[in-house]
Image (spheres, one colour):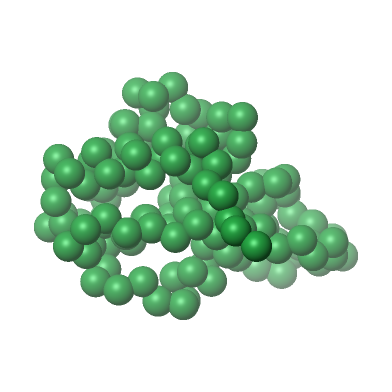
Length: 135
């Protein structure tokens, strides 16, 4: 099965690439957050900063997650940024938990500004019907 990249994911990656090209890899995470936020809003995307997502099972809160952004256009995208030399499985699991805690259909992307080139990973939503959540 091939995973296709949504137009929203492609746009966010394109904006992140522009930010990374302008800045390089020597800044702390808050600088990239602010720069990417500005670029996304300049592109007229609806962006929610640091939303709280609550994963519920049988209406009981199981865990709370706060991604860097939820970006909405025709689709919804959960975005987490990193500034590290290597993406770990824990980083991927964090984004996956955010995507699964979102109350509607959403994709996820993990963007790393800390390497010698911009790197990213698409994260897809698990379809466990026992997951219910609220924002």
